[in-house]
Length: 466
Image (cartoon, rainbow, N blue to C red):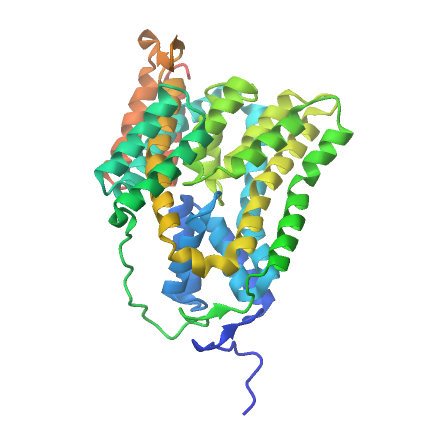
């Protein structure tokens, strides 16, 4: 009996998957629906895909979904978006991966560009300043909450705690470059894996997967096998697409260096963003504020607050950095045109590598999954991420809870110390409220941001805003 072409074919374990297991139009609608719900950071974004793809649609099995997630955590960049690319590729081939990954970030790109424009135009008004005086302390609490969540999962051994502390001290006290910290953590993790093989052993995932059999079973392999020709083609095409816009600005624009500087800087940041957006933001904040002077010290946390309110990966905050930086250094361009161009350029160089990494590495995922050396290295990097995020919390607190700070530079020690007499009681109070509702009542980031923004407006109404 011929199979109804409108009914998706469920693959048996001995079969291999093919492109377009489901109609591309249906997959596109589903990915667009997912993209509008991707609030709450990577945990929330992964939960949305889990519910839609695994529990509701039954397009992919639980173990296969976790298998894809494990692969994506090995890569630099936002793992949730890379998981979307991988799953889209699994269901509809390269077209599916491009559509899934593109739609995953599109709503956030549009929303954050609009919010960045609002900030540039109205950010100095009393009302908007009052809003940011409320949301900045909330971001401090959100980052502290992220430290707790990741530490609980990542620091299961004293050696891993030591890596986290060392990473924090290296960044906060000795100003060691962020990429070097990540590289050293990976090497230490690899060495620990050789000496203590059990240190990187993850907890076994439950085998239960209730519901009807998924469209792609846990044992099904994608038909696209790894090959040198395929890998070389993807590598060359991806690299050209990645850097072509930066090269175009370098050749065609001479009135300002901001486009090339941002394009090169964020291209580099894209390949060291291990452990999620929080892990790389301390590096981005330090460079954007102290080296390139695209932002003032307190503005990075404001951009992060805006990114927290939009769908998509949190690393989208780099779009805010680019927008504000180019608006202030437009060269011969109109400031608004420069800001929009820089925003799109930085978005491009940040997310194109995600497609390159996933499409290049997906056929090798089965080999990567059980490689003990890679697992050990990743364990070290994940432990260091806890220290990196703690450094970010210190940076945000320093520039939002105090009005001034001074730099201590003695030998290898280089750190910023707050001027205690310039402490801001309102910021301290709102930070305390944010910590209380997040840790005491289990509030999420969006709800906490809303409450703290309201408190900032109330303070503005009864007295002078910060």
